[in-house]
Image 1 (spheres, rainbow, N blue to C red):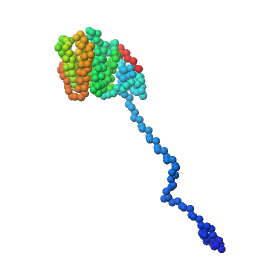
Image 2 (image 1 turned 180 degrees about the vertical axis):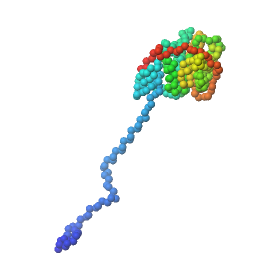
Image 3 (image 1 turned 45 degrees about the vertical axis):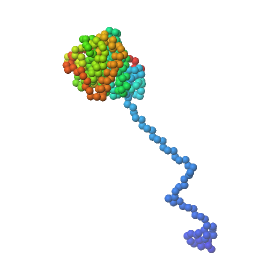
Image 4 (image 1 turned 90 degrees about the vertical axis):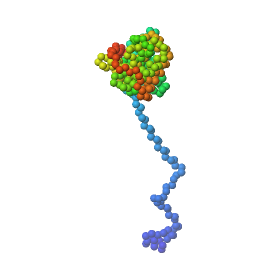
Amino acid sequence: MAMALCLMVTSCSASTLGLPASTPEPVASASTEPTTNPTATPPAPAAPAEPTATPVPPPRAITTTTGVPVIVLTSVGDNHVVRTPCGDEAIVVGGEPIIGPLVVLDPGHGGEADPGALGANGLLEGALNLDLATAVQAELTTRDINTALTRTGDYLVPLGVRAEFADDLDAELMVSIHHNAPAGDASDRPGTEVFVQTGSDESARLGGLLYEEVTAALGAFDVAWTTAPDAGVLRTLVEGGTDAYGIIRRPATPTALVELGYIANPAEAELFATEEYISTATEALADAIEAFLTTDRAGTGFVADPRIFRPDPAPGADVCIDPPLR
């Protein structure tokens, strides 16, 4: 009878049908938290992004593995196209970058084609200039002043290449180191001459400091000096009015050429061959360069009237032989 009644209604309970009651299945709601599996492996953290390498610009200049300073024209990795001492192009590998801003020291002359003046004691000017420039470089390094030499051995570097070397490095100054000839008149003081660039106040100031420091230092030596009547800080011009010396005329870098004394004078040549002279002259040149960089001192020894002189042409690329670069 109960069954019949259930057929006549829309729904029947289990008890109505005479069946045991069952527990209803729970229905999950949207707010129910999912059950966490404590044994599940957490996802690995994302790998950090690789840092982007900053491109390293090629050096402006390098010292090759053979010790030759050269300007770098282009680079691909460790391969450099450079301007050679003779002004040609060559490929070199490796080398040490030359760091600037800096002081360029130019040892005058060099190589078989341009040895410079000769002392009565056999002292060659080109070799003496290099010895002194190398000593000045070492001294300036101890004072945390970066330097570069236009040449580091007995080889020719044409004047145009020396000028380009300083300009391409944006050097703060260049000092060209020389010892004079022929001997001048007898003097009781050093006949130091410093040649400076026409129209450049910075070149003149550099020249005045070089003259002041060098003459004061060398004056302590008891030597039969020689001098020219107009020795001092001066301009030397050709008849047309331009600077006569190529190492003065060519560079835009403030430059001075210093003739410390006369290697052609036997008494001075004997002094120049001593370690005491190299040490004394080194300190004087370094003091002048440091004063130029760190003070506004003007120096002394300025000569108002220029000297009119036409020097012999300096040896050029036609007789230049490059030293080994690799």
